[in-house]
Image (cartoon, rainbow, N blue to C red):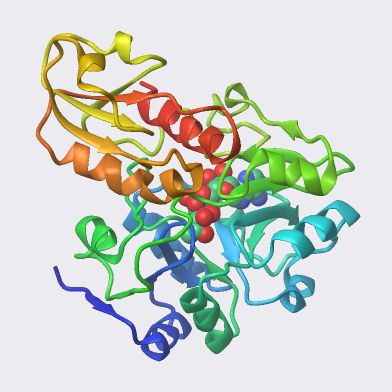
Length: 325
Ligand code: TXA
Ligand code: MG
């Protein structure tokens, strides 16, 4: 591994200004960042991630003052969402200006923008004074990194610096909302729950997984059904009684299961997302727990579906896509 794990924000900012890649902490997951206005730098992101070019990137900014440079319109809905949830785990898809390279947006007329809350990400954005394009810092389709060491494991040979900001406190990617016409559309459930969004702007249309089934879907290119996947096969069950009886298993659940709930099944390892059933804690632990199970040398991971409320919905979405074949 040739990369350095560091807390030197100035060094990271210098690399970004030189057109190089830097992985950095955000409150959701670690991002793989480059100057969003430099197409050669952005091309490196796609190369290192092995990401298909039809999958557009999120552009991170330090403050709403930078919106004018990048976008042509900010609807009243976008305004409400931004003033409630920024800085934070919310991404808004907005009409873009020409200055945003086509590579960033996969040729779309819109650009995804987020103001992150993590102090390290904010400082990096403030020092560079540049918009930073950053997808999650993992190989395309794999598990998102929530610690600097997770990034090093997947991308350590290909980047120079990982800006360490500790473990991510939200732990799942941002909620992506398209604010183009009159009707906002929730494209990806994430760190802000559907209930919080509804409390802010009322009912919102949800893009269904079917909308993403086609790689060149007009709704949100890149949101493929299969994503966030461990190497080990993963299945989802609704009740402990449905746990398979054969093979070596790793079990992922919200609460600890009782021994009796396992019947005869020989589970080898277990990961509990939150002993108290707290869904925010579960989200913060989610990717690290999947990583541990993936490294356990088992035949299959069995995840128990979480309650379909709050961040439970986001975690279930990631599980569905990890299980998709
Ligand atoms: O929390 C996060 O959002 C993290 C951190 C690093 O900020 N980033 C992240 O990026 O999850 P990524 O690339 O893994 O996911 C971004 C998704 C893309 O898959 C794409 O579908 C959607 O955002 N997206 C980006 N630009 C879009 C656009 N113009 N229209 C519709 N969807 C867009
Ligand atoms: Mg990702």
